[in-house]
Figure 1 (cartoon, helix red, strand yellow):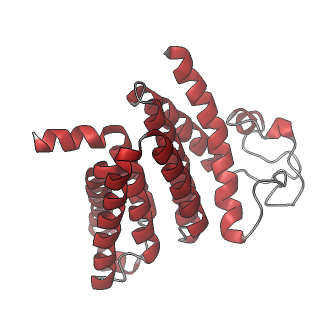
Figure 2 (cartoon, one colour):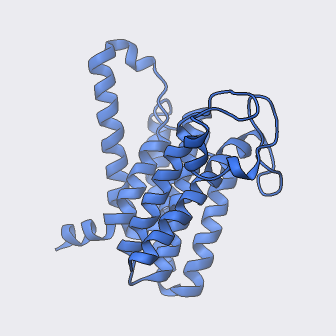
Length: 248
């Protein structure tokens, strides 16, 4: 089992690196599956030795080899986070391989969504669609009996957030609605604690800003996607257990 967890962690580092590239390219209409990575500062092509997750950033001391421009620490942090979550997902679903694969896809999707929403206040439809297709493809082939629950969870979660957006359009957007619906596909009934965790995290940050910034905090635009992504991780790793505790 230890070997599998190590492989999952290393694979997560690579997926985290890929997620940062997708998060940068997709909102800007750039292809992400063919072209080699380029330096955002000078446009020079980044060599393979400078694309090793975490290690390259450390060796280069957070500076691009080509022009010396600073490289954001979000790259190694994202890679480490995805690696750790991949390892955790494999541990939690060690007896359910199909669910583990769905969870790994889910983590990658949430990483991309978090980065795009933090940077540009965008939750790309392409990323949500790709994640949904992969999730349903795996679920239909491995557990067709569980697909109705996933569809119901998607409709319920998305419908609930749609009503919230109608009532309070300044607080959330349609991107959040679509993200919650997609989370329902991945999590099934565990989307309920995921939503609650996301709302709780967002509320805590909002209250903290009001306490420190006062009335000025009401004018600050805070992306809600990262909070939903955090809730999604809670739902993935502990959601079904939390639902069972509640029902019992």
